[in-house]
Image (cartoon, rainbow, N blue to C red):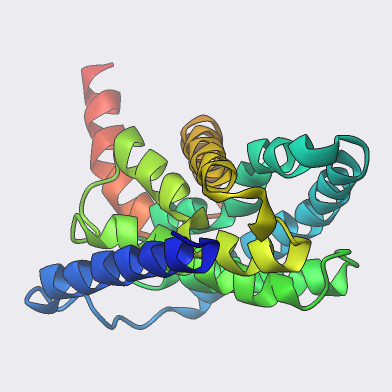
Length: 231
């Protein structure tokens, strides 16, 4: 099996997951939902911050690939979870279809404008990783927000995103095992970053009062009220 066939299979699996998620949500009116101005601002700010921070992350990845030989792309894969934080984070805060996709797309725009050495390709990468992050939330109808769902959102992010990068960085010739290992490392990195960062950041922003009007704030309010009564 060639590398092209491998990634065609990966793409088919990703599209199949997206189709299943679509049908799961089609009956509950959660396929297309509008965003408020506040939600758009939150997605933009988080996406831009993650994008600006992603540029030095990309430079570090280039450093790995320059000085680590054939292991460089694998080492880069281990820190790729840093690129995927905006999607799970905005999905967790806003809890609407498309939030992760839009946040990661803005992430890509910010990376281009802040001098990401990988150039315009990161726009496509941002959209693809956000889209797959959204798929994870869609599987649960945008109603389940546990750590396992956040981990799934982070883990799915690189499934499509790695495809253009394989050809951009020229690692297709490294073989199927190498490319699968890189994808597995990226998925693990995405899951780990999501588990460690998403909830603490979201809850810190909530306590700071900057997430008023979001679904996260609405969902957490009854819990806070109950806690106060018990105290």
